[in-house]
Image (cartoon, rainbow, N blue to C red; front, side, top):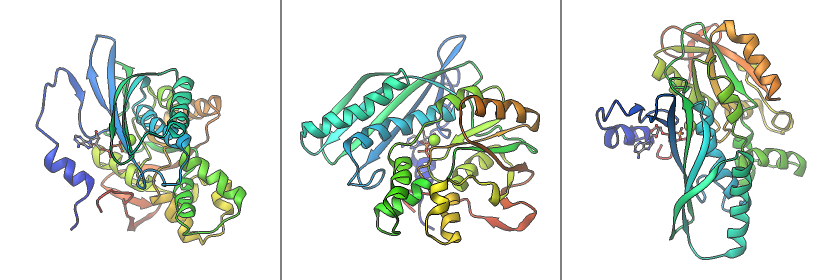
Length: 321
Ligand code: ADP
Ligand code: MG
């Protein structure tokens, strides 16, 4: 069997328990949670974007800057954290001031929108690669984790799924499309919306949460694995945008984008049924699309509702598979 990025983390970068008084949540969630003071915990995460892997080579510098910060904000959202500051490690093949001007505008305009500050970094020469480390805070004990889903909980997804995967297929000339549809799908790939406000508002309601970076099935799979539960999904309830619905592709391909496509940066979370009306009010207040797509069940694995014969694969994007 081939090695996945998760096998590498497990084998080489998962030391035993380390300083448990200080580290409330270590490796294995969307971010780490550090005990810093009696009221508040520090939440820290880092993500790298490499050219040709995390963004198409033809991406605008503005979009690259924007996305590098957005994907990190998304990990803060997944933890229910309030992002506060970030550092930037930049590897550049050459000095291109026009590119840097656009890049910094993309990144810093998003930072201003979220009122977070760039506080340091590192600048080196090499193939284009951008690493952002982000830090935020949560009230003690309120950070959302992947391990809290319970049998009977509803499974929610914000926004819609599959647009970014469809956009990548357009960039790579795997599907053809009208310009209008392409623009709407590409927006989702290049400037994903991190659901930071939703993450914070559901803090006291949700039992678990993850952001969908590798694909819905894979990322819900992380919740199921960490929570030791299974899930039943109603495929018809998975949210699909108007643009993806109108795209001239067969239904099988559309479903594959929705279930297995990465880069959506929507939140997938679980919550007890009693919170349905609270959570729907939160989504309404924030003007964020929200769908209940299934239920947490006993056992393990991901299934379609009333069909436990045919498990859905919990696969998604993996750098090494
Ligand atoms: P995400 O998609 O939310 O950014 P990943 O899937 O990249 O998270 O990583 C899974 C978990 O493994 C996270 O908790 C991350 O911090 C941790 N991790 C990833 N790479 C390493 C590494 N090289 N050393 C230590 N921890 C790592
Ligand atoms: Mg994440």
